[in-house]
Image (tube, rainbow, N blue to C red; front, side, top):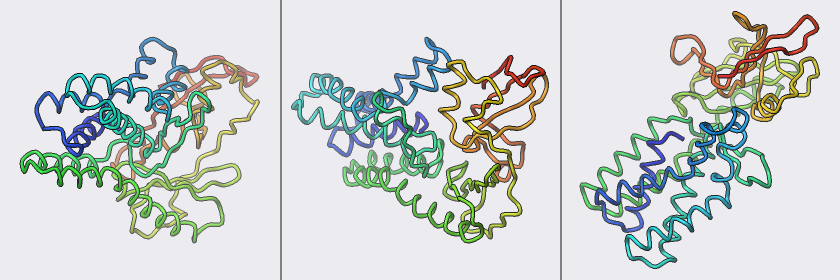
Length: 304
């Protein structure tokens, strides 16, 4: 989730738990809510493979959140003179809320790291959701103005249940599409979810994808088709640490002809913004471009 939503969640929880809305508290609790993202430091000191592998790793896991919560509890106990138990509950709540906010996105988080590198993702809220964030901020402002803990509790309830409510909308869209095809249907988030959803129809060798409006009539013939990239393929030499990590990272990879100096491009459909929403060319995050020699062996690559 974006930093603004994380920061706001920390302040909302502090108000819910009875802390006064002083500048010191707002800055402190908002900042603590960003703490699990300390693993972003890997982008400065590690390789690209390290970033994909370790961001949203241990500090975003069940055990990492607990450890961060306990360590932070000592700070809260010292500053606010609360019991260590109450400070621990407060700190752990903030850390686990951060993890929850990342879990609800399509990017997901490694809840069981380092014992498992599986990425858990609810895929019910887009990485930046103006409906979610602005409503949360509005409720928080009212809680400050009215000096109302009840309003803060409402904000906390919204923080928790909005993603759950989106799951219902997601299931509705999936049900509609499933009636139109015998193939597997994947529904995930895109910009302006829950008004829009990314629908992927998986065939044997292809994915068909389109960002659809929740209540519009859906026509599978209007979907754009892409050739699947087989992660087990031996056609190219994906033997380096980064390339192996990249194939672990992507869920719905497709391969297209490259442009310029590169022969091919691979990207994950869940990280593509479709032009159906913004009226402009697709934007693809975490795309891999590579060049091959005459024998099809990979000789050069670029990642962005």
